[in-house]
Length: 460
Image (cartoon, rainbow, N blue to C red; front, side):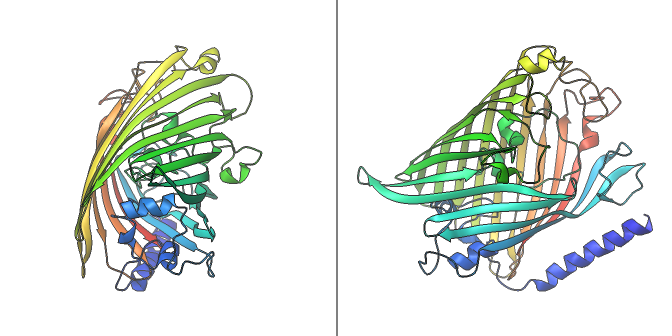
């Protein structure tokens, strides 16, 4: 290990120690929400960031619930977050494949151990703005891009009325990522895994709704939740490259996908709560056009994403158990990509399936122990031009198929002032970009990308 990297590692461990020293007895929620409501983190979360029924109601009613019934907060609801991590891939990544600002434990000729210090640093405005208007706005520094950018943002006004002698929560949302306004952890924006190594290779193919538009668009929408049983929402997005929604993509340009015109998103969910159990089943999706390449001119492709999801939760004082699942089908009209020689066919499709389950046991004196197991799969037709051979990121046979398993262990200590989660995660790939062995045409096996990931995730 060279002296410079050794110094960075020592500095990182010192920061970790500082956070540990600051910890004491009881763990609050994200501090701005905790200060506003006076409630612990388990009021709104099973284990953050997964929401409980109370947490879902808090978000649906605009993040404005407070312990004194005030119309505004004397102390602005500001909070912070830090993620300090260590990552190890099963095989070394190609020389020069990591951004130079990533702190590595090896020389640049062989990269498979990385200390992400800090992997991410975030600042939040999270809470009430005035009366029934509130927000969850996150700006994040990530060391893989070495810059501060806008992250998830959701500003909403909410109110209650009575319809058919039943309570109806309705609201208006301004946000920058389809599904970020959702209150179930089965949809992409806040779905499992909640954090992963930001340098490790990931499969190339993904649906547009599956994180492809985050901060590249901003939208305005309406939502309603009737009788704790039926939820419906619709949001229309446009590019954040310019215009009213420009602040929702601050710092990200020109990295994001460029959309052409409006992108409508919809959501419908049916829910039922009985005792300690809650159940949700629903559908969501979007339709949109994107430009080929980073600019906002020239040919476009058309995408139609239709998804179904389900979530089950069992919550008791000391135990929680949850299952989340989603299936996404994407129809692709690749007119623009085909015309520019980027695909062998003018139409294509992708199917994504994910399911995960978690269990946690909470103790008063020693904290919360538990973990998750998840399965993921992406499949689609072969296209040897769209998915061509390339080291690590390519496909030897032109197939987008990938699947694997995620195992995670978590521990949340009972600390005061800083809400902390220690996670140990291992991602195992059975298939990566089309096959298990020599998937990229350059001798790389899917198992080479298996990733061990240790994370210290703090909110303060």
